[in-house]
Image 1: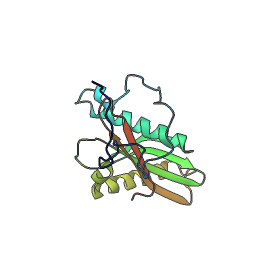
Image 2: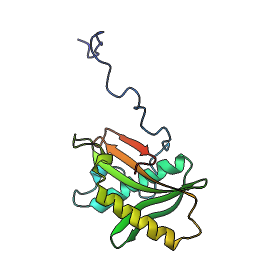
Image 3: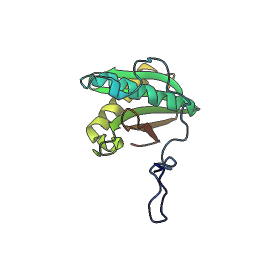
Image 4: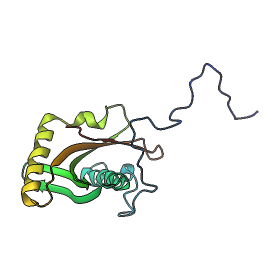
Length: 165
């Protein structure tokens, strides 16, 4: 008895034959090796939210660098605000918020960016610009990088949403 299956014309094609249109086409060819112990968020203890966040931010940074952005700052913090990444491409300065979720049906990561958090990111961006006056350009943008991980063997979807808020 053979274990191969044939698809009938009425059966839908296998899931994820190609990435959705909104998934970033600029993907790094490898997972960066800055910290080889952080290969997937599932290998990190559940209580270590900061380590999972660092993994997601590191992956988002690698994708943005592969798309031609230059990293200016990471995890910039002030009292009452934080910016995950500050990047530049050409004359455009971009403040990036990284949101990561497991693919458990709880919703898309970008949907969990509340107005209060947007306000805190804007406040931190103003503080960053005040601390780095030479870096400010005529064009500022706030982006979101949404990361959905599909379990230890399921892969990762990365969406870059320019001008998200």
